[in-house]
Length: 72
Image (cartoon, rainbow, N blue to C red; front, side, top):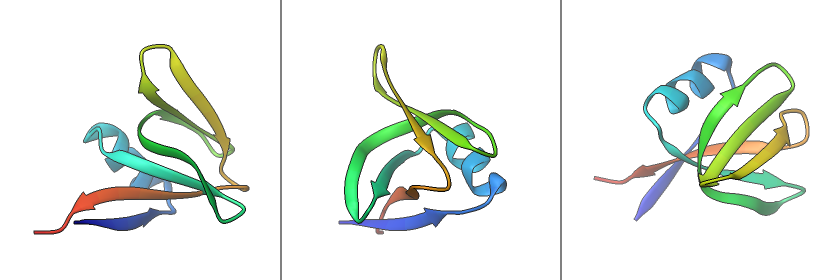
């Protein structure tokens, strides 16, 4: 079973990027991106990739980001 940790700060996003953690992205209470990795981010946008050539751009102000963690 997995546990979600919300990503809020630049440090949270940087840690998920460096450790290549899988994330979920929600917008308007609906999941729009599942099991992707962060490729890059800035103050406005988070870019995720789930496969070769499969990039998605998410506005930080419009989305919620959660790191997937395995419960031990």
